[in-house]
Amino acid sequence: MDDCSEAILEPPAIPYKLLLDTAFAIPIWKYFAGFLLFCTILLYNFLEFHFFQDLFTGFRGGPVSLTFNPSSDIYRAVVSKCKTLHGRYLATPWLSNPHFQTSFINFFGRPPVFSYRRQMFHASDGGTFALDWLMHSDVSGVDATNNHVISEDDATPIIVMIPGLTSDSASPYMKHLVFNTAKHGWNVVVSNHRGLGGVSVTSDCFYNAGWTEDVRDVINYLHEKYYAAPLFVVGTSIGANILVKYLGEDGENVPVAGAVAVCSPWDLLIGSRFICRRLVQKLYDRALTIGLQGYAQLHETRYSRLANWEGIKKSRSIRDFDTHATCLVGNYETVDTYYRRCSSAAFIGQVSVPLLCISALDDPVCTREAIPWDECRANKNIVLATTQHGGHLAFFEGFTASGLWWVTAVNEFLEVLYSSSYMHKQKKKESNGSHSVLLQSSIDQGPYLNVADGMVAAMGNEQTDGAIIETSDETNRTGFDTGNHEVTDPRKPDSSSFVAQKEGGDSKGSTVVERCLYQISRQNKRSIWLLAYVAILSTWPIVGAALGFFFQKKIKRALQGKTA
Image 1 (cartoon, rainbow, N blue to C red):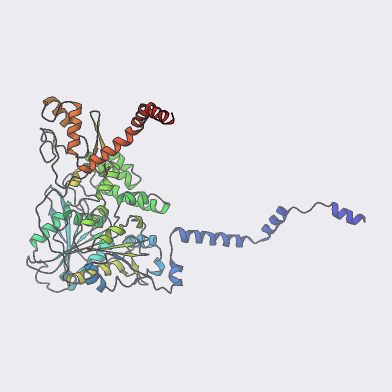
Image 2: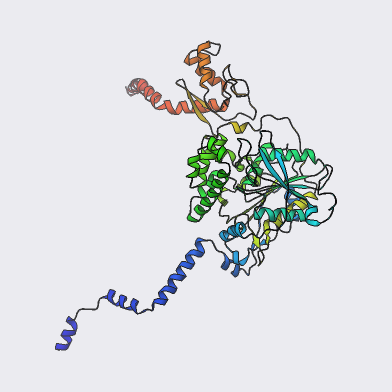
């Protein structure tokens, strides 16, 4: 009896102590193995590996997704005949990661070995940049006696390549593209950006993500000199953005038979926010910034005079560099203005050239969020090809990673297009100020309120390209001030015109009321209805209260008379 009572009174064992003793009984190597497994899974997902996904599908790869207009002749007659675009893409197994692919193409791309033939191009503003040529005869070994000179009546197609940000003709991915295109029997020329390729900047104009003047000058020059040769253009990364923007700006008036845009950023504002979102993207942001700073270092004399050199040296991101360099040199109001104005997505609807766009959905630099799916689908001249994997300008395939899938796709598309009847033919038209959008502010592209001299007028952006902007008498009708050479922004109130009206006492009126009526009369019907809507919403509380107070007694009297 005493033993039972002692057993009952004995305190129970503490559960946590038992768990702790059990945990210490497990060997340490098992903890280490579990931690290693956890880190592996975390790293696998963080770096976006897809090896096991490829393994479970039998290394068949993923299909190429094509987005196009249902009534597109370009798809029906050209893209439908491209086996590469209708096949599957399988990334190199030991590069089953977008970051590995992107890094490998830049550091271990194993580009083919060959030499360019350089031609210096002098722009009208005094700028100089290099055109690096690789002819078909350079890689085929034929016609060695003609000194590799293209005759002006040579009908061999010419492919113009536009490199990406801080890239030139020596970049590994560019050499892959140039060499394989030349082997297909075409003459290739790389239009290097200003200040790259070992060429000094000779004017105060620098290239940026929306600088289309150099591409336009080069293409027009080649078209005039080699009039019998069809011209095709391939742009990569930022070069693709420049290409699409150029095609949209000039519309039908381009001497380009066909084009390809590879890994375009499309919307620079979205891309700017994406590249500083995650830790991995911030590494790319930092790496590209270092490249831009190195570019600026090569041209320190001009950048220190035109931009904020101290800010350039302290830049930690692309956005910082654009704030202290690109915006100041290019005369952009803000960084967001620069990004909005230079994004190629806004120009897709005006593209009249057969255009193939290639993007990888796991691109770590140019996010899939910026891909303009609906705009590409709406344009009958555009076909968008996307793959699940590929990285940025990589798309390695084969176990030895000896080839780039997108290079094969580009060459096949251009070959089929060249053999078809759907190559674009230039339709020349008189210039009507189609590039005047570059002179306008893009901070706000929607309707807004213009407040000046105490008056409010609804304003819209319905002005067409080349429209005449009405300014003061001292300003000419093109929007440039003849005295100070300043650009008149059509979306900002021109205070000088108001001063001229007030001092001159002209027929437009000198009182505030007359000026208000004059400004309202200048607006279109949509703006007037917008003004009326704003006026009703803003004054209804006061007017309603006044009407209620005024009619309140009459309503009461009427009700009392009926009851009586």
